[in-house]
Image (tube, rainbow, N blue to C red; front, side, top):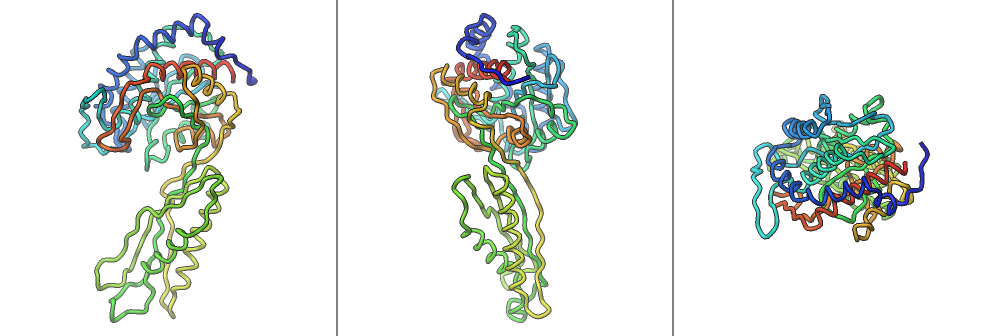
Length: 395
């Protein structure tokens, strides 16, 4: 199906979509009520099963036949997945299993870990799924409603990687809209990729006085990290290199036998990421070789602990144009930005993808004081509907 030009203003005025918009506005308060219930369902890293089951049950109650895979991703669709428009929100949070999740309210805000990231996104998808089950919008593409695992931190986008793997259920999707958090303006169309690694330097170790002069893994590692920290990085595409953690040694009076560091490299350009990855290993090799003394040498080992693919959905792509038009229709100015989201995976495969917020305001992300306010919440639901309707018609 070829891309088509869509007059979103005209499309939004059609009776079924106008009715769906009115339904979402009328249900905006109940969406927040559902957020209060959902936020209390734990979804710690690698422990999303309970929230996955909760999400699937709500979709089933709306008339769908959701499927949960072995990772606890959830997919619900009326029709075929081939050529569908995917509407996805991640199930997981950054908070451990024992985190108190009871919401507290003060000054028009709901405070609870994960209330915005990503309870808001999940609740918005459920609201839209219910409306589309009740109102036939006559869209030329089916819409798949998806809850994913492993979007946060060490999850490494494992849910989306699994769904979009070769032969995976969503590999044939036409486009992806990831719904992540709150907000009315941002449109993430540039996927910030990342490589995360743990590098370990090992030696024989010894006494800080008696064995002084043998290669010190911590000395070599810090020398390498200092070189990396001073390495010039491109500003376009924006690129970062962060030495995030470092550790080594067992005693104040001992030469360490081992030292390690964790490094986070990010860029909007996959080629830049590869070059930096190579540079890290080159610097480590050079510093460990330079530290050799006689028969005493050092060994270096690198372990990849995370990799998020980079890519771009062009700013003039129909999917991005529709999202911009939908944003203007609710009276906001669209902001095209780069970030790391579930949309990274499809974008890296050449499948058009964006990520947008679901309305409302929020703060304290990834802290115990995370909060959500429903200022602009109804408009966010409308924006999502208009983006979905426009994308399903344009692509």
